Image (tube, rainbow, N blue to C red; front, side, top):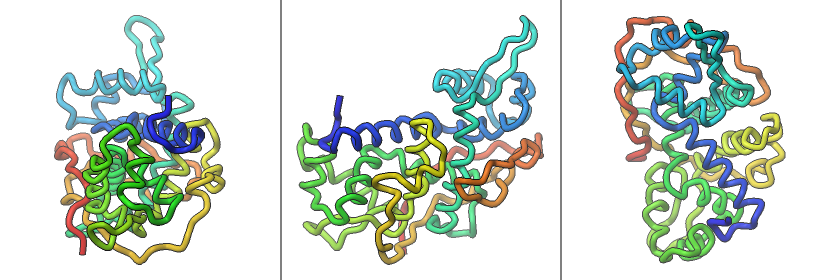
Length: 280
């Protein structure tokens, strides 16, 4: 059932991308998926790669990733159970360098670059804001839209003034811009630059190869880039280690567990903070 006044195909596309983001954004999910890169692991082997997770935290996370179809639990016998990526989970990994590429260009940090894993987590936080995906789709399609018109499209069954909290959040996060009260809204440079990320998520959600992102009906046709308006991420946090340099969507992932979590005794990272905040 449609939840917006977007065309049916677009409404379904937004819903699929929103669902995909909901699978991977919850805290630790990306780190678990990266730790499972390579051969399937026993629970104890996986737990050793994620030492900052307290007892009892890993099992429900694995269960939710299995329910989402990203991780597979294989029971070889009563004493031998392993976890590994499903085909769908493995196909998701090449999107992560695309997110890093976006973050490296648009994610401004007060104390230098964040580790890539934190760039991914902060970027996903922005994209899972309430109504964010639908608003971004409309702004990309219409270029400039008033708040009232956005409300009629994004939340047609709600009071139109309810559009302003998510709009203000997108402006604060640096993904949208406006010239002031009563003026129309448009994508910022960072919002427009999300094309490869959202196009790749859309392609993945329907089982297409990631290079299909370039043919996305909305995000595959870049418009003139707005003037840059960088935003500031959350403060840098301790991470197990950095990801390798970002790659294009066409490049296969070449990440290894030892590259990501080579220090088993590393301190537990702090909880992710909401991304976004003051801008220059």
